[in-house]
Image: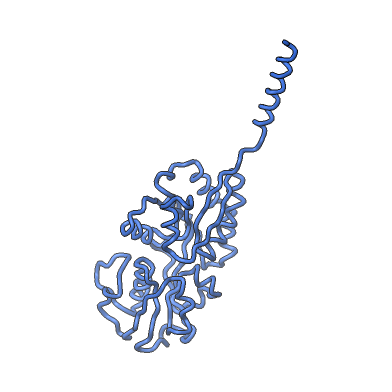
Length: 263
């Protein structure tokens, strides 16, 4: 009996040691992005995150509203597509319990035209398409304001609306459409404000813009998670993977200045 018990103990010990030797299962992270650079950058993050035991599943969304809805509902673990003013506006309007955990990249906004070679060629009464969400639409109005195309009232902050225009020398007709449609609207308008991810997707480059935003400012993009997860170990590992030298090199070489690392 002793010999049988000893044999069984040795077997269980060996089995236990074998189990301990098995590699830990990867932790799966569903991360929401918009198509284009955000998705491409996460593809570069993926192998580095894998070294830290994280399996990244990239979930693409075609607009700017659903990624935060999905995150707040727990359908994804994180998202990477928005800047702080946009997130602040979403939290204020919708009560989301989500927080930023890291800066990612900056996408300088541009106004593009397929009909006019430069802004001076844009005629009086021209139709300009901007985004219909408060943050990106406001950002486009600030860009027009900074270049003297319109004048906004004082104290509008980062989310002005068309109602805040106090001077409009060229009598521009400003139409608001979904951000994902602005590049597609170019044949139908004189010019359109297009976020860089959608511009890149449409084959536009920053040098094509007839007006371009200063890359500095509050519009750096970020990774957001639910507040309850903010201190989780996987968040730290994800941020370290994103902020790696390899990802910085990928951004600089892939996008040639249209997307800028912000870490």
